[in-house]
Amino acid sequence: MGILSRTSYVIRSKINSLLNRAEDPTETLDYSYEKMRDELQQVKQGIADLTTQKKRLEIQKRRLEENVEKHNDQAREAVRQDREDLARQALEKKQAKMNQIEELDAQIAGLQDTQDSLVEKKNDLQNRIEEFRTKKETMKARYEAAEASSRVSEAMSGVGDEMADVGRALERAEEQTDDMEARSAAMDELMDSGAFEDQLSDKDAIERELEAGRSGAEVDTELETLKAEMGKSSAPADESDADADLESDVDADIDVADEEVEAELEELKNEDESP
Image (cartoon, rainbow, N blue to C red; front, side):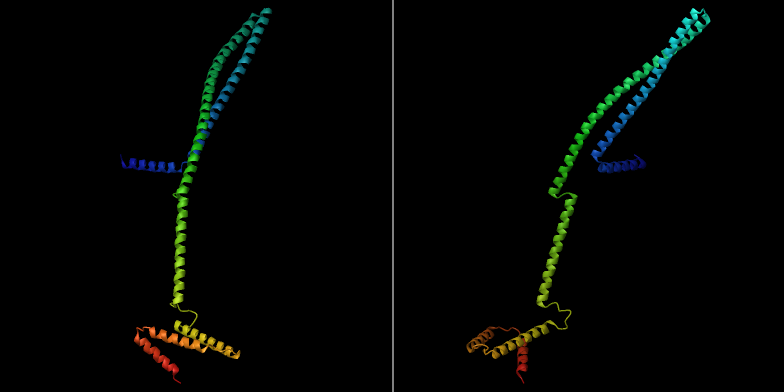
């Protein structure tokens, strides 16, 4: 096989494959049915034209027959008038018309045979078309049922193109949701730990903690002042002693690992106590 032949074969096979994928069996069946109906209509039109031609010949034959009778009457009248010459002319015309009638009879008989044959073929074609129509409708119903069943099966199994797209969309949505939840949790954790400084504030985390402590102390002082104004003491001596004992016990149990940090804290306390 030459290169051109192989190329032509490959191209035809590719085109045939594309046509097979694009072909809709129901549309193909409907198209075939319409083509057969067109052929039947053409056969009917041919029969009608043939019948019209036969009718014209029959009309022409009737006219010739009328002329034959006329010439026959003329010949009799000529004989009664002793005009043998006119009688001979009338009989000659009569004979010519008879010959034409014989020719027309042969043509009419031939047209009739052709008409009968076409009518028989038309009836056979019409029967075949009716059979094809029944098979076509049955095949279309089977194909549509199979197509619907296939779509339902694909939808239920999730292997169809649309269901696959839906599944992938759900997977992407779930992944994005997980990412957003993880990001939100991470941001909350970092904000709580003070890892992210407030971009709108010029204070760091230590300053904010100290400020919060001072605010708490001021609130406690104001609360004690209010209690004194209203004649209430701040706290019983027993409770203060108990709190002092508890604090001393807790301080005694603390195990400080970093001595340098402890020394720096002691130095800061001494600075605060000095006048």
